[in-house]
Structure formats: C-alpha cells, structure tokens
Image 1 (cartoon, rainbow, N blue to C red):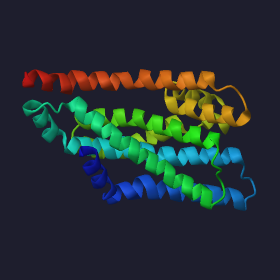
Image 2 (tube, rainbow, N blue to C red; image 1 turned 135 degrees about the vertical axis):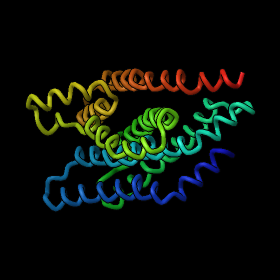
Image 3 (cartoon, one colour; image 1 turned 60 degrees about the horizontal axis):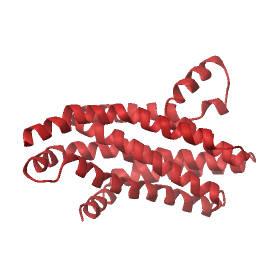
Length: 246
C-alpha cells in the first residue's frame, strides 16, 4: 500500500516527468536521428545510446529526485521509527521497490521510443542491458537514500546538478573515443565504479566476447563503492535513531 501511494506521488511530479523521462528521450532521439542522417548509425551505437539515455533518467531519478524525496520525509519516518515498528530500514526497502518500478518504467519508455525509430530490436542483448541498468538503479538508489538522510535540503539542492555531472563523467566510456594520457587517467578512476563495467559488458556481448569478468567486476565495484554510504547512514542516522527509540 505504501509503495502504491509513493508511486502515484512520484508519477504526479512534473520534475520527475521532465528530467527523468522527457529529457533522456529527447537526447536519445537527437543522437539516433543525427547518426542516421549522417549515415554512421550502427547497432553498437544504438545500444550504447540506449543505455546512456536510460542511465541518464535512472541516475536522475535514483540519486537526485529520490534523495530529495527521502530528505523531505525524513523527520516523519524518524518519528515513525520511534513510535512504531516501521524502521528506517523498512522504509528504505519499501522505497527501493518503488525505485525499481520507476527505473524499469524509464527503460521501457526508451525501448518504445527505440522501436518506433527502428533503432532497437527486442533480443537478449537488449533484455540484458535493461536488467543491468535496473540493477545499477538499485545502486544509485542506495546512494540517494544515504544522501537524503545524511544531508540537509539546501545542500541537496546545491549539489544536485554537480552530482549529475560527476555521474556522467564516471559513466561515459571516454576510452571508446580517445586513448591519450588524460583519458587513461579518467578511465582508471572510472574502473572503480560499476558504470564503466556496464559498458564493457554490453560491448563484449555485442562483439561475442566473454562477459564473465566484466560482470564480476560490475558487481564487485557496485558492492564495494556502496558500502561506505551504507556504513555512514547506519552510523550517523539509523544507529542513533534506534538508540533513541530504545
């Protein structure tokens, strides 16, 4: 019931519709139409731009929008955790279900757009890409959950755009464009985070190369880089709240 209420509230949010659905679709359409008109469109580009477009919407929804929603309801749910059995962890899990549904909807809308433009085919590559993007959305939602509880509303408003820039830098596969020294430094930093390995999985899959190693690196980096956020949230918010409740 709580998930349905939260889902309806998000879908009525005009900012959600604009920044996490409309803008990614416009970007995807512009990239694919430009490539087609320039006669350099390939299936590989189609998959990469599809994934980039989905990640644009998923990251905006899971980190920026979700962290703000968490921050706005933080006091209420802290109070609920003190006077009832509805803990912050339970609230976070309920919200995670909502996030998975929303992120799947973002991917579905982009898929429909790709089918209309005849730039995507429903095959195992596409289904795996959707599954991986949705999984990465869980990772982003964990970060958004932590930021929403750890930071104040004004701080979240101030860092929303810079966060999206940082995420874009960590996700965009610069190594597929250039190979100079600066790009190598950026790529080395990117390898710490799961977005880099997501593109490796897709490119290996399209090329017929084994995807076992990049999938392993994907999950290891996702778990490793999310643990500090979980630890800080537990230490600074949830542990203190539990202590006050007891």
